Length: 245
Image (tube, rainbow, N blue to C red):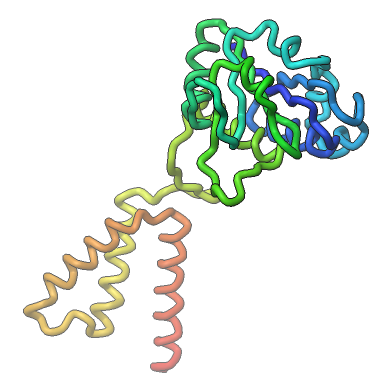
C-alpha cells in the first residue's frame, strides 16, 4: 500500500516544517514533499524541530511549484478552512483518509496539499486538487498551525489503516484474577464479616451474602488487587487479636 504524500506548499517557517515531519512520523507517514519554501532548503530550524523525524526531511522532495509536486498523483486533496468558489467535493479528514486508504490499496498515489501558514492555499492551488478537506473548527478562529493540520490528517490515516480497539484495560504487570481466586477472596471476606457480626439479622443473611458475591463478580479484579484485599483482611484480623489480648 502506497501511503499518501504530504505536500507542504510554500511553507514559511522551518520550525513548522519540522513539526509537520514529527507529526507524520508519529503516524507512520514518510513521504513529504516541499514546494518553494520561503527560507530555502535545507533549513536547520526544520531539522532541529523534527528531532527524531529528521530522516523525513533528508528524503523530502523539493519542487518549484504545486503542479510538479503532484504530477505523479492519481488523486489530490487540498486542506483549507476558507470557503471557495470552486465546484469540488468537500470532505472531513476522516472521510479523506478513508478514500485515501481505498485508493492506496488499489496501488494509486494520493497527495495531500497543506498551505502556507499565513494565508493557506490559494485558489490556483486548490483548483489542481480533486477534493477539499475541511475540519469542523470554530468558525471564529478556523486557522490551524501547519504541524497541527499534518497531525490531524496523519491520525486519521493511521485510524484507517490500523486496527485499534476503542478501549483496552492497561494491566500494570499483572493480569485479571481467575474466578476461583475471586471466590476465595469472597470466602475470606465473609469469614471476617461473620466474625464481626455483620450478617444480622439471620433472616437477611443469605441475601446479604448474595449481594456481596454479585459485587465481587462485577469488579473485574486483578490478581494483585485480590492479594491486596487478602493482605488487608489479615492485617485487620491481626490488629484485632492484639487488642483482644
